[in-house]
Image (cartoon, rainbow, N blue to C red; front, side, top):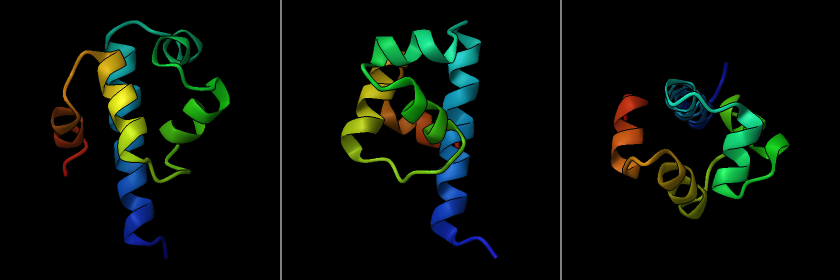
Length: 76
């Protein structure tokens, strides 16, 4: 059974992917915009990592939304 933390990471990753796609970014283009390695970005979107606050901030800034909005989109 997946842990609660794993479920949260997956929900955040899904919200990030949806927001990125809504804005028309490829994963590679967005990773460049947010100054995040493309392969790390993919792992984030798959929910494979717990994000730090700094990384969440970089991603939300790149998307032009607040971290709280991004977490809200993840249902948190």
